[in-house]
Length: 193
Length: 193
Image 1 (tube, rainbow over the protein chains, first blue to last red):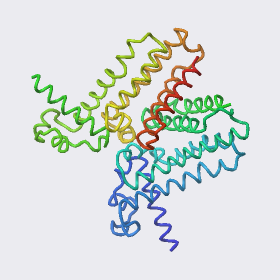
Image 2: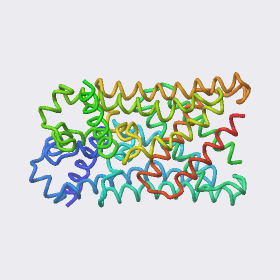
Image 3: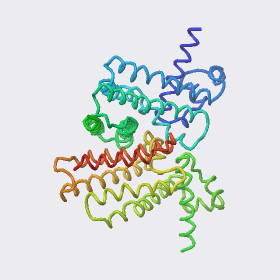
C-alpha cells in the first residue's frame, strides 16, 4: 500500500514537470509511462483515464502550492505580513517547476475547453483570488490597509503582478522580471495604506 | 493576383480565429483547409509549411493589432492621452477574436518551445512593451507623468493589468473583469502623476 502510494507520488511529480513545460497537451499516458519506467497498462491502472490523471496532477499541484505558499504564510501575523509572505513564497513555488507555475502554463490551453479539468483549474484560481481578497479584508480590519480599499480589486492587482512575472520571466526571458515584480508589489502595498 | 491575395486573407482570418480559441496546437493544415473550403494541397501551396502558416498568422495578428490599437492612438496628443487611448483600444482588439487576444492564447504554449515562431511571438510582445515604455517616457518629458517614474516599470505594470484582464475574463469568466481592469488602469495613471 505504501509502495503504491509512493509510485503514484513519483508519477504525479513527473507528470507535473511535463505539464509545467508542455501543458496538458504534452501529457500522454504513453509518454508519462516511458518517463517513469512503467508499462502503459501499469500506469493506466493507477488513474483509469487521461482525465483522471489530469485531475490528479492538478490536485497534486494544489497540495504543493498550499504546502509551499499558503502554510508558511499562515505562521505570520494576520493581514499585511501574511500577504507579504505569500508574495515571497510564490518565488519558491515558481522555482519548483522547470516550466514555471503549472496553473499559468495551462490557463490559455483550457480557457476555451469546457469540462471537469477546466472547472477544477478555475476553482483553484478562484480559491487563490479569494484567499488574497480575504487577507486584504483582514489587513483592513487590522488597520494595516486603508478602510476604503476594495479587497477584490486588491486581489486582481496582486494576481496581475504575479501573472505578469510569469510572462516576463518565462516568455520574454527578461532578466529584470523579478525587479519589476518586487517594485510593483511594493507600490501595491504602499497604495493600500 | 488580387483573388490570390483575398484567398490568403480569408485563410489567415480563419486561422487566427482558431488560434485565438485553441492555440497553435489547434491549427492544422487539414482542419484549416476544411474550414476555408480548400484542398489540403491548395492550402499548402499558399504557405509551404505549417511553420510558415503559423508565422503568417502571427504577422496578420500584428497587422490587425497595429491597425486597431496603435494607429488610432497615434491620432491623440503625445504622452498620457496616447497611453489612455491604447488602454481603451485593447478592448476593441480583444473583442475581435472569439477566444480573446491570440498572443496571450499562445504565450504559455510557446514559452518552453524554442524556434522561429516563439522568437516571432517574443518580438511582438517586446515591441508592445517598448512602445508603452516609450510612451511613458514621452509622458514624463511632456510633464504628464512625474520625473522619477521608471518607464520600464510602467510598461510592466500596464502589461500586468492587460494580461490579468484576459485571465479574469476568459478563464474565470468574472463579470467584473472589465471594472477591475479600468480601476487598475486609473490607479496606475494616478500613481504616475
